[in-house]
Length: 285
Image: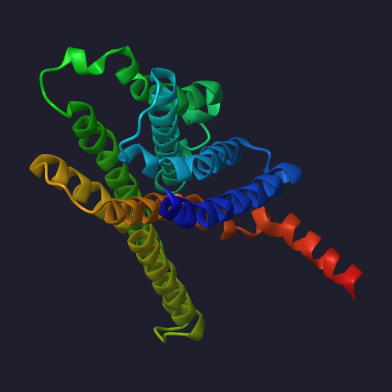
């Protein structure tokens, strides 16, 4: 437990602080009070709750004597927050994907017309699924560890693959639009490549590199942790608990950084914090 708190408490504090900065940036700027930013705000709230529950998630893998009520809180609540965070992340990516892939249908998107229903869809199913063990899930199935397999390969992994597919599709569409812009620019410049075209290609290359590095840094550690746990669960071998603790802390912590990367990259979200920082500097001077 000392190792868990030593790793997760600083990481959890950083996640909570960064989410609060972005949330205040959206709340304080009235121009950001629209449906897409409300979806992102819901994602930030889920990420904030995940940061709060982060120190308790690795404790789920330790053998401890708990009462029935404490066991439900210690296992159901963190799992619910994790699944809600994942579904909110899929919803945000889907909303932005439609904005780029089908811009003519974006304004008529069902999520914009039924915002409360969309929020219900990303918060209620995780709570229902995470609560299944409390209703006697193990008594309904004859397969051991079926709950874990269904969550990993039926919910978590498809959600991650969906996010990766939508991100790749957006990059492919952007590449096609960039080629069209360069073709039109060359027709004006009589076939000569210009500095502007090179800057556009360089900017797209940096974008692809940034997306790839973000995926590798944020999702690969969690995927490794998830499949290592499944492998040892199948083989039923005893292994060092410190290894499990380090893998779980780094895997779940790196995944919780994804919304922060999306938020901190937008200057509109961080503008209030930047202005406050400037005021504090002026007063100190």
